[in-house]
Length: 358
Ligand SMILES: *Cc1c(COP(=O)(O)O)cnc(C)c1O
Image: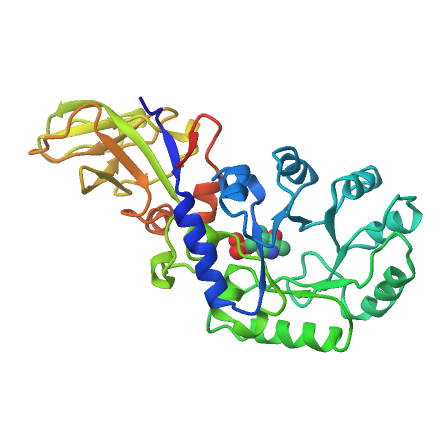
């Protein structure tokens, strides 16, 4: 008996998506971004499925250590770098690359005594204005890293895009030019592109792309679908009907009693709710796929359950599968109903959802 709700992860889809990204960016190596538990897919599942990736990107040291403990030997990169000096010896011990985006990190490196130098990726703020050094600080920081014995040479260079998911937005071209100009002639590898950069801005691909969402088969662009890029959704979020009920016209359902049926119908109760990470604010009409039909969520999503209107002629039964998203119901479509992005839906699943790798 399979548990439910469960997130079924297709290692074949993950592998297909990596191969597809290599086709899209043939000259680039790939840092597969598996932060936030592999965007909800299980970071170790993803790393094992994608053992041919050139490296993995994480947001926190703990995430990187989890991969090392799970036997992953590939290159690992902390996308926001280290936060405390006590993390530096662990970077050395476990051979983890770090981004350097702030002078506090530079100081910690200069004051550290390490057994081996650390591989760093110097982050330039080319226009995102979240992390990274501004152009007027860049030369000084670069020189200090060169002079720092705790830092391996050459120094790698990176930046991050603010608007790469808007294919018509010229801001990305400006960021790209800014980065290229600032780093011209320097040694070291370069990495600029997230998924959207890799898909829409080929000149940003350079030495290393850093795709996250595209590896999971999801498009980074609102209104778009992974399938439009020949990417395959890697996650199917599946639960079951635990009740099918006769429902009379005019009756309400659930907390707040705000939805009322205009007709006699059958309602289905699906065992998934906000306690599993399915958003409470999913409005009426958010689709759920049951026996090949898209049926609408009605009433308020509760902690452990949600209700759908199966229709008056429904023949669905207790125990039937309900797909919340997956290849036949793209997570991008569900996200559009909930007015969020697919990134948030897949990442927010709670530990109550069993993550099963096939
Ligand atoms: C999360 C992250 C990525 C991956 O972004 P996607 O849009 O999921 O491809 C790439 N680079 C950095 C620095 C990140 O933080």
